[in-house]
Length: 136
Image 1 (tube, rainbow, N blue to C red):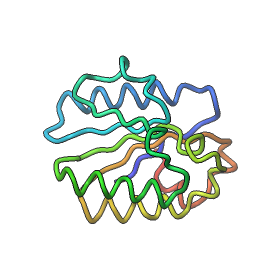
Image 2: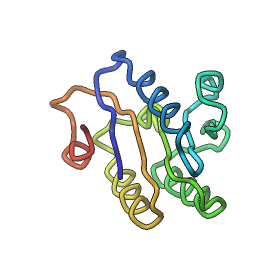
Image 3: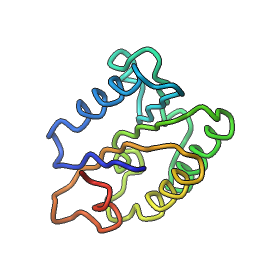
Image 4: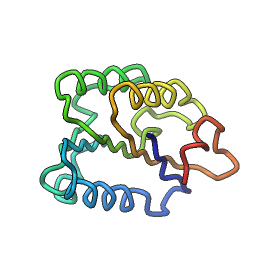
C-alpha cells in the first residue's frame, strides 16, 4: 500500500505525516521508519520511530532510494511502514519525474508487505496519473 499526502507547498503536509507516523507507531507491532532529508524531526517523532537522515547516505537518485529501502528491509524483516517526507526535495526533482520510484515502491510493498506514506508538493493539475491513484 502506498498513500500520498499531496498539496501545495506550505499546506502542512509535514505536520500531517509526522502526526500520522506518531499515531501509527503507538499501535504498531513492527518497526516504523521515517525518512527525511535531515534529522530535524528527531524531537517531533514518537521515540519508537526510526528516523533516517537521508543526507547521511548520499541518496541522489530514485534507484538509490529504492536500493536503500531494500537494504533496510533485508536487514530488518520487522519493518511494516515507511514514511518519506519530501521526495522531490530529497532528489531535487519534479514530481512528474518520479515514475521509477513509485513503481518500485509499489513492487516492494507487495513483495515485502510494507506500506509507504509519502508527502509530495504540487498543484492538483500537475499530479501525474502514476501518483494520483495513491492520493486519498
